[in-house]
Length: 314
Image 1: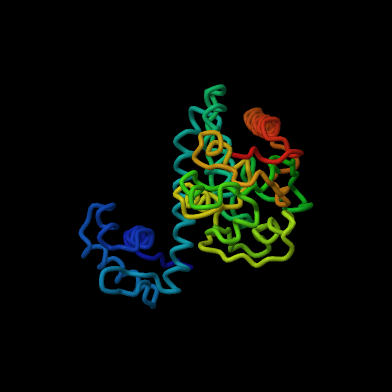
Image 2 (image 1 turned 90 degrees about the horizontal axis):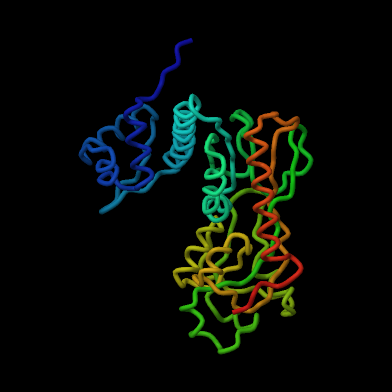
């Protein structure tokens, strides 16, 4: 049976337009005119049989069909990019593929992975970020960093990052609050929350933090929420409000003074991250080297920020 593929140039134009929500910016990226992008989108809409964008005065927005297609196309393009990168480096280096939750990749792994690469020049690392529950049809990564999946046949889990949840803020926000901040004072301040959009996962949240601080059951007013922790951290750095985040994701920001712990009170993190690997092991030395290095880095962090003490207060 002959499979009818969508027009591939139109898919590329659609991916760029969906990412930018702008035909002009998509055209600039692909070095074609906005009119050429619009023509490609119309061609793809005819193939799909449904509109992919709603055209408004100065912008475009995705329709529901467009949103679904954009998510799938993004995943496909990501696989193509990863496959190409692996193919380019496979001849000269041993490649370790690691899949990771977005915020851990951005705030914990990316800032320190250079130390592993400097000590292991013959090894290349490919990091792919994505949702906790990926498709079983995808290639199994050598290592993964996610919240615990429980006892899953074919995988083994090792605790990597636990830590504590502390309330942090940008130094510029502190002068707007009482001189000595208490947890109760934060109820009147702008609060940033994390609202995970994955079924089965939830933010431990401000309600639990306030309750542990002795304030009983409260329903705090949230100023803004994000689906990813590292986006909440960036908003917090910019002064948008107080954020409740795991200390291992703001280690550098606390040490550099970009964020401060505002109350000196921390709540144990009940959703730790685990290092997940296929069982049985691959037996590849480069995978074992990276695994051991990740565990050593986590131990080094725990020694600096022990779980049996509160976060350092400002």
